[in-house]
Structure formats: C-alpha cells, structure tokens
Image (cartoon, rainbow, N blue to C red; front, side, top):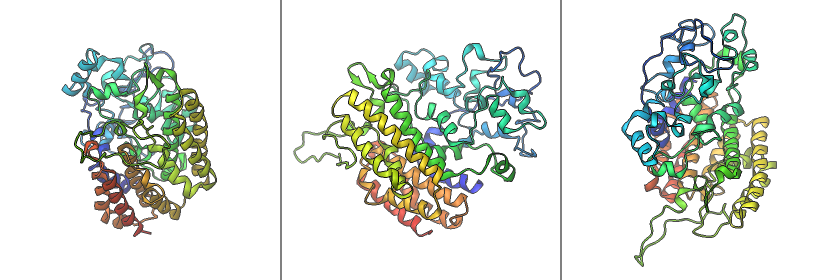
Length: 464
C-alpha cells in the first residue's frame, strides 16, 4: 500500500488535484489527552480533535501501535503532504485569497462564514460541540468518522470491535458507499449549509471541484492496510472503490440537480451541473476563426447548448462495457435520454434523471459484486482511451476524470501485485504527459488530450 500511495502522489504532482489539496495551511499541533473527554457535552456531541490525540490513542510521534499505527494525528497534521490537507482546511480561510473571495461575496470574514465552514471545518451544530471542539482544527477526525460523543469510551475500551463502534455511530469508512457519501458532501457537493460550490463562488475565485474517490482516499490514508486491518475490516478493492465512487458521484449530481433548491437559479438552471467549457470558449469576428468546440457523440443536444457535466457517466460507461455488459446498454441509453431531455423541459429532465440514477447504481452494484479481474482492468483502461469512448472527451472535466481513472486503475493493479511496480514507475512519464494535458483548463485541447491519453494507455498495455 505504501507503493500505491507513492504512485498516486507522483502522478498528482503534475495534476490539478494536488494543487487543490495544497491550498490549505497548517494549524498548531494537537496535544491534549482524552481524560474526561465528554466534559458535560451532550450525547452524540462532537468532542474535537484533542480527544483523539492521547499518546495511548492516535497521538504518538511514531507508528508503534500494536493494532493501529497510533500516529494518525501526526499524519493528519503533515504540512508537507496531501495527508495533511484536512488539518489545513480552516487556516486557508484566514489567508488573502479566501478573504478576497469572501469580500467579493459579501460574507464578512471567511473564517467565520457558514458558506465556508461547511467544508473547511468539521460541520458540527453549535449545540453539539464539546468543550474541546475547535473550528480552527479544520476538517477533523469527526468530520469523516462521525461524532465521538456517543461511543468514545467503548472505542478505546479493551475488547472493543469495529462493528461495535459502527453500531454506536462511527461511520464505516471501510465500505465504499459510506466513504463516498461522506467525501462527496464537500468534494462534490451536498445538501448541508456551506457544502455547495456554485459558479458564483467560483467566479469570486474559488477553485473548481475535482474528485475521484479511490485516488483521493489513497492521498488521505492515515492507516496501514496490514494483516490485522484485513482481518478486522477486509482488504480494500480499489477497482470497486473507483467504480462505486463514480456511480455515487453521478447519483449525487443527479439528486442535487433534481432538488429545486439546488437545481435552479432564478430563471436559469444551476450552472454548477453543466460543463463550464461548453460556454467558456473563445469567440471571434475573424472570418478565419475556427471554433474549438468538438462534436460529442454521447450528448444528443444542439450545438451551443450548455452540456451537463457527464464525467462520471463516461467513466461508468467505459467500465460497464467491459465488466457489466448486461447493464451497459441500459446505462448508455438512459444517459443519452437524460441529455436529450435537457433540450425539452425540466419535468422531462427530472424524470430522465431518476431513470439514470437507477441505471448508474445498477452498474455500480454489478461492478462491485461481480468482481473485476486483472484482464478486465487492463481492458477498462483501453476502453477509456479507445475509439468507443475517447470521442466523448470534448471538455475539460471529463478529461480530468479520465486521466485520474487510468492512474487509479494502474495503481490498483500495482497495489494488488497484479502489475510490476518497477515497470509501472518506468512509464510514469507517459501518464504525467496526460496529466499535463489537463493542467490548465484555459489551455485544454481535446485532440491533444486524446493523443496523450492514448499514449499513456499504450504504455500501460505493455505491462500486461
């Protein structure tokens, strides 16, 4: 698993994803112990990072624990690594860029604005905060694992089990669906306050949202997947994690789109759901000018119409063609029907979105339950970069998702021992070229990207 992380970090050094992760700054170290953790806090309260930081819990300076590392807080606070991004999330709100964004939006101080704190801090209601809870901790343990107040004592009790912890309210992040649901709230968008980065916020200067569940999970991993972990929680299936992440991201997108509080913006639709670059393209009065837009065979919509962001549809389609062919035809049919419905009216689109959500989850379930073997993973990579799918890479967002997918699937092969790590490192330059093709959204060229992705896929093909 160490090699898996090294491969992912190496790739993201050239990607937009890493630039997002390093937006955050570094808070002061946490040193408090867990004595009297509840301190009069209500049951189910958020008790704060300090309650996890004892030297007999997760606050050691080295990984010497018998069951878990016990230096998880140090990893969470690592200023030089993507693993420390969550701990830096609040402090970035005090920096000039965030203050300028807040000023443009009329929010006052970003560090105390609900619109920002929903994702830059643990979203704990004011009445459920224990005495050690601090907003300045950023995205702390409880933001992902759930509030500690209900079962902290049993969590560190002798003989405690993961199942018992989950029964008392801990989020089972070892399961892909639970992890995706929690991550997507901020990394994609949620229904909670401050968990939706709309175009207004991006116009004020916030970076665009980019997310892939398995790759980001690797970058944020604070644990070792050793024999003890496998015995307690099972081994992570990275391909299933990727596939379920794609399915749930699409499901989340369609659910938010169907929500009238999120899906519309006055007389306009909510443009967050649409691909920015179908509108944000160069125009010119020069008679020799050639528009940069390319025809997209997956979207039966007229030229010039904003296109729904279909990055996850494309990835699911590629995976289904290889590993879930029984569900693939229906999914592709429902995807096209959804795009087509967008040309008619909102009621037709909402109905089509409901059908597409069902198809997406069916594909995700098929990929997770059926198992995807070594040969199929190579075939999915080939399919993403091949003639059947690559013509759909006409816009930036889908292309970013494609290169993350290729990298994730290769890393899954290496991490499971199904591809040689040294050989995979040798072709890293080809993958980094594909990342470079999506480094700058303003310089994105679909033809250049398809060529670079094809070269990366051809290099990976040599590892079979």
